[in-house]
Length: 235
Image (cartoon, rainbow, N blue to C red; front, side):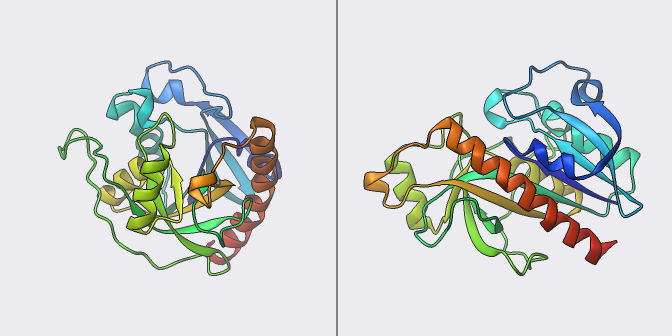
């Protein structure tokens, strides 16, 4: 069975599929965490071409100051209750590279960061080792993703530092989830949807909320088709 984790504003992805069951994240962690805009935070049991897969609609963020057990609870639940073969992690992002188009999904080849997460302990279950993976999405542009802990993407100086490190994108997720799955030995891939391009950084401005939602809405539809193709190839 396959699963996909949806990033900010991508909830419309689920509209393309038949939903069999909904399980709120709060029931999984035992702790109520208010939803963020664009994050319904529900596990959806969905169906495509007669095959069942899971949608993790909405995510917890490191910057919310949550305990590791809460951040990991959606994954802990699905891995203990379903025979998961692979998980696709998705997120919206900002872009640095002039050739990256807003609204065009990117396959994340590598995640870069200088910011610490949890200590390496059995309880936290997180330690990240950067490595380049082969792509299951050959039609998507390969990009490097710069992780920021949030709650903002960063300053211009931080953007410039990430660019020097080789980052094409910047965002506030993917790394905690990827680190956990990597330690658990779960097959996974990361995809990111740029909703703004900050190039050139010296002249960068923040996009309007309406424009971001529009790009995310269109990106949700594109993601549904990308995921259908993935399922057709891997079911």
